[in-house]
Image 1: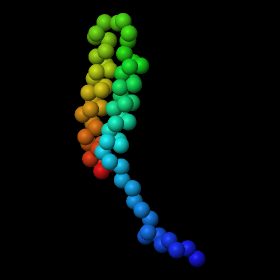
Image 2: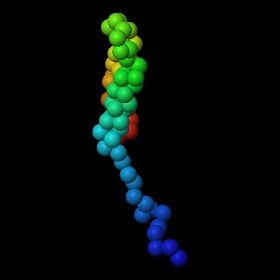
Image 3: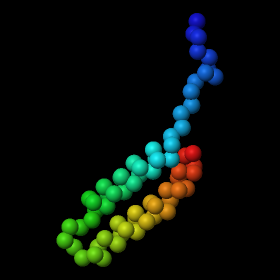
Image 4: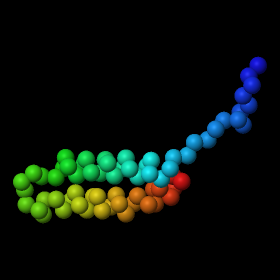
Length: 66
């Protein structure tokens, strides 16, 4: 006979930074990989646009997770 009831299970919730920091680290690494080394600055515009969209969407994602 088990001493644990189904209601005794613990629920875990992630803090906001547990989602935000890995997402920012991924975006930074993606920017480093995708950024051209010696090319003109206009080539980095798509990366900057992508990072801007991530930073705009991040608060909404955090609200949904929490």
